Length: 276
View 1: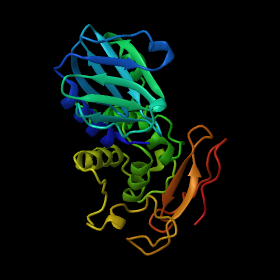
View 2 (view 1 turned 90 degrees about the vertical axis):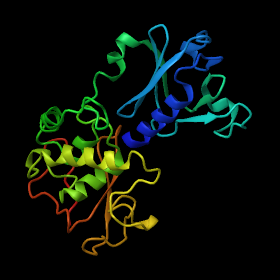
View 3 (view 1 turned 45 degrees about the vertical axis):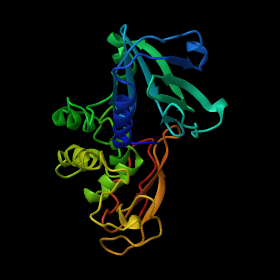
View 4 (view 1 turned 45 degrees about the horizontal axis):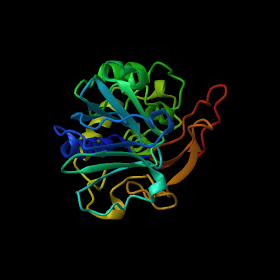
């Protein structure tokens, strides 16, 4: 699933391609929007909100989309061949005189009044790359359930908007904390939102995400995707395990030496933390 920095870059590209121009083509291929035609209306702006995309259109309308695991927006020049996937996977086409944006496999696509955007993104926590970033509110939300495992709390978009599984794993490593540590037991918890914002800000202009200082493609990340390989800090093999509820389960990567398991057991309803 794309993370907040990826969506920030995508919103920027869509904005550059579409904003300020009237739509010459509009084709929304989902049942609830099948009769909607926005042709002639000007695209005002495309903005990110965490992992959500908001395309604001003349007349007080916002096209809200979310990529989840498989969705994608591709931008094409007038004579360019579309290569994002077969035609039956297209869910949206927004065309101007200069560019055409095509949405493939979009699991979320809905049209809402711009004044009511809070209905679709109002539940989100402070946006790590947004202009209204509020570290104090982000910290308050993170600590609202102190017994929750750190990895789950970081991944919850209601706490901080924009962290995906890659950043969750990398943040836990940089905090030297087990992903199963109760978030309320994290020393200096204010470091978590501050470091999260620093990482996303550093990567928002990079097509290849990096959390280390290494220029080698296979060493750009500390632990994510490195199960069985030596930890770059201590040499211990990186481990992996599923974490989260059945609906939101993700593979978590961590170093059992740099990020020792919490001493106290997990709370009711939570599986015990993996042992070292």
